[in-house]
Image (cartoon, rainbow, N blue to C red):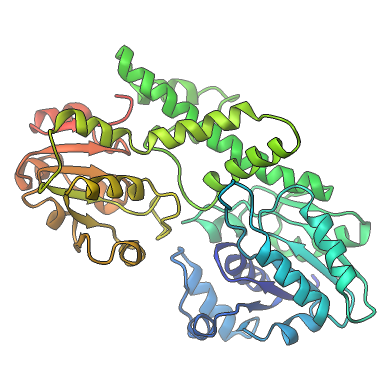
Length: 433
């Protein structure tokens, strides 16, 4: 199998994971970032993001000479066979995607490449962006070289990103020529995975359509869960009954306090914005966004019905990350709820096994951070569970009764059996049960 010289622009979830996995499959990879401190850290084998198995593969491939890191984009790009763009496309206030980082890298590529090159956009970008990137690079070229742009969206989940890349269900490639298609297929040949080859715009749309469908599924189950509470049904029983239907599938049927992270919130808003720009309303996606926004603070509102005030109460917050396996706080339900609790004058004691440092950047002094769930629960008047970390799931129902001043628990992840909590004399509220 042919080995390519690959440069990867950006060392966040998309870029770093892609670069490390390309090296793991035998390519020679150099990852480019503007932050010298970050590059130094990665060369020492320390990952800037919390991701299972990533540091191990970083150290292995760096040691074996297939992986390196640099801030010198000129040397990284000028001799590359392929350059993958994996920079961020953060959400703008109107819901559209900020393409400034993509544009900056595109200009750098145009000014530095000295041989024919395939530029591959892995960043999530609005449909039609790859056409603009290709034209922008060609308009700005310094040397007489041939450049093509391909789309290769990622479908990784935070917490399982390495596995999702090396053992992906499929690789989506969007190209406009047989040459670009052939090269991308050769790059991915060592992965031994199914490859779906489509046009560039279809690849861009596949990314949004996939993420938004999963967001729809989550919001639908949360909507049904809310109705379950009103009619006396149990959402977990309903989900189990649904899961046996192959047309529905068993995944993404778990009710809770909404989705967060770097993909679903941003991608639903971006597709909603794009549709609006085209004079069309994606009513299903709009509904998913609305349901999710309301779902995040559902337990807080329940607690407000039960308590006269949070002022001067000790509130245990278990879990800060938007989901287990990551330290990412983007669109995490904990953020919305902590803000409301602080406004009410609550004394918050928060626990998370990996996301505490990131949370401290937002709330350095307003919250007491603890090292164990038990410290948070000791003498607490109320507890909120926002992330289903294993460390939290291991707490026995009797511990809430034993440790808390008032065993009042609001569980946004449906960790516990309702009957067992009742038996242990814990006043317990969850979602859809």
